[in-house]
Image (tube, rainbow over all chains, first blue to last red; front, side):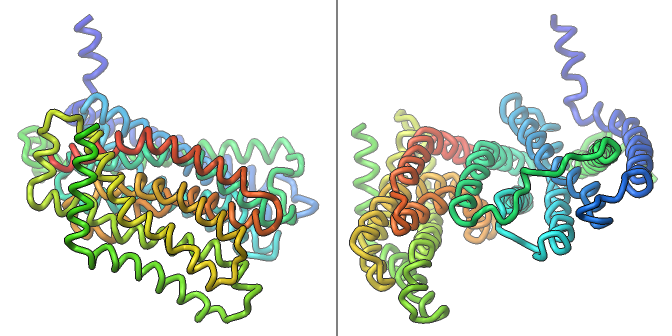
Length: 249
Length: 221
């Protein structure tokens, strides 16, 4: 039993996770490149032109994956935060800190590409639609987390305080979503209905899924790269970091 | 329970001794709400439409101002550490502090809101709904804000940071609070919004002191 526990928690220590992450990063980059290349090829050359929306609809191959990832990464961040609080592992906090900027980037990208899509389709860069508004608030939650982490000098305290904030946020995300939705239906009529999407061609769906996978792999690769930098920064005083080849040179 | 009452009594006494802090937040509320007509124009139809939102946003901002005062003075003079060490559960003491914070910042806002509502030409029924919504909503603001205040305790630039953390979490309270008045004005009835606001309050009463306690323990490590 004790052996199994040890093997489970082996990679919870920054020292053993650092080389593992280093070995995994090229694979995730390669997967991101392959999925991205195929996904872009499908989305630009294979997927048919939409007869209502013309060529402009192709922005959704970036927009939808970014929106998915922005929500998904917040959940992953909350999972790491919860693990960090429950098990008091150092790596969990580092992972949460490493994921946050990518999550904020994805939230920003989904808002930005949404605006680019909305201008030709709806004639407005921004409408106070329920999804847009809740995506904006999600972006604010990411920024709040990053700001709180940056403001606390002690890394362990920053991890724990950030973890509580993320967990409070994760409880609030569904409440915010539904409140914004009801607020929206109270205020404006059904001028724009996002839920009633036109049925999608299979190739479009494939393009979107492949792009989502590419974004996902990219996020993992970037988060792992960032967590390696965080490990080096926080563990700079330890012997094993000083013995690393990349540190000595 | 007596410990909770003692904490409330102590915080109220401290607030009475330093009246200016409480009054500053209150006048901030009045001034912010009075600035909107100056910026937008004196048409009463327009003012009636924006009144619930303006009063609620002003209430959010005024509550934010008081959050820095919630734990910082006790942290500075070491009282907070004694509270952590005391045999009474910290969660109860924190609940007491939040209650006192609400009495000093939230309750005056509720009592003043009708006066501001008259400025915005709201009728009597709408004023009543506004007061009930604020009565349910301002404790919610204090409870959620306490989490932010505890997280930013002793942190560089805590005052600005707390607004960044807490304001996105205030969105549901703002929506349902202002929405209650708006749907009353439009004839839909405020019951649904008020029920949701009360549900949020019940949820926050249960969870917020707990999260605040965890955050305080981290800050004091």
